[in-house]
Length: 97
Image 1 (cartoon, rainbow, N blue to C red):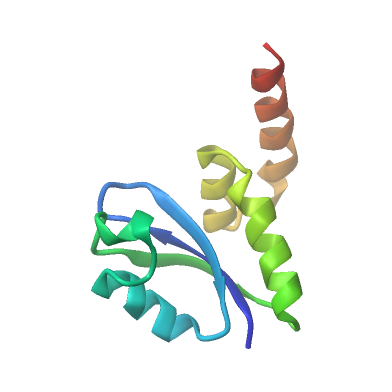
Image 2 (tube, rainbow, N blue to C red):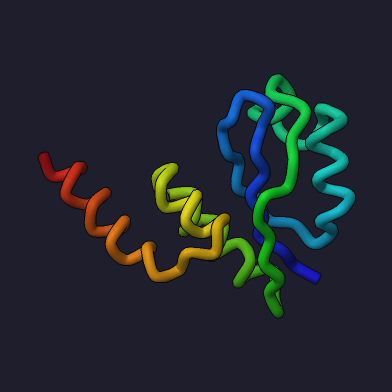
């Protein structure tokens, strides 16, 4: 099953990815073979995951979330979906100034 996921690294940063085998992929990150970014920020822990019917949809969601700022990702992790639109507007205003 395709997944989009967010892991929190040991330094507090977030990494967003997509995979068809979530358990194996998180293990790869923790072994230092998951990605260059996470290899130096271990251990990592899974903080969000969402299943999708197709890998294309999982990749599309991954790319969207990767463009988000920290506050918006944290709202998604908390399940605070109502906060997402306001945070998007806030981030847009910051980029325009």
